[in-house]
Image 1 (cartoon, helix red, strand yellow):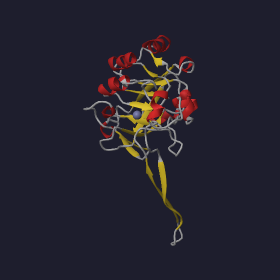
Image 2: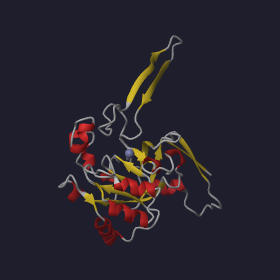
Image 3: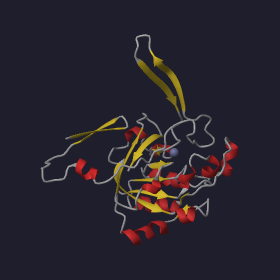
Length: 264
Ligand SMILES: [Zn+2]
């Protein structure tokens, strides 16, 4: 049995019939390197422009107490969907499960990276196509069920510059028509469902492109109980294949999503 503590969450991995001949999990992990795919949360954290609030950290106590020891605590508040975060099925599916009910199995697994940055950086409204996925398969082999697909658009390099990342630094409802960033086409979302992909991630604010009016890709994926990771950081450090993902969202009871500690 192994005890892993990550992002304040304790996971027990039970190993039935482990023998000394088998490689231990820590031996396997020591051959790779951990990559942090999460942005830190601060007053710079980007939220969808119509959010009236962002991430806020208030100091509750800081300094040396009358008893002579140092002590600090803060209180934070934030909307669910901002910075690196998870969209649970209940975000766009009326009967979809909430973030606290996603299984750890669905939040961990083998991942690949489909790189569309050449096309997406030339076209802010780029829609990731089925061809982008099948082209990856031609080079790397078929994508098996239960894989996690990360899409690299190259827009992560603009974070947290709202003007470059969203296409506008404006706030409020007036900003919505001005949003221009790439996303996943709805036909690609249907492919993802058909191929039983476990979860998807992207280095933009949304799995639907900025100009989307009906968030069809959200509807299709969440309707099929496939969660999404948005505002994924450092995706340029992740290789095309051979990566294992651990995605641990804050366990908000009945939440439609939440801040995500995502590591590869
Ligand atoms: Zn979201």
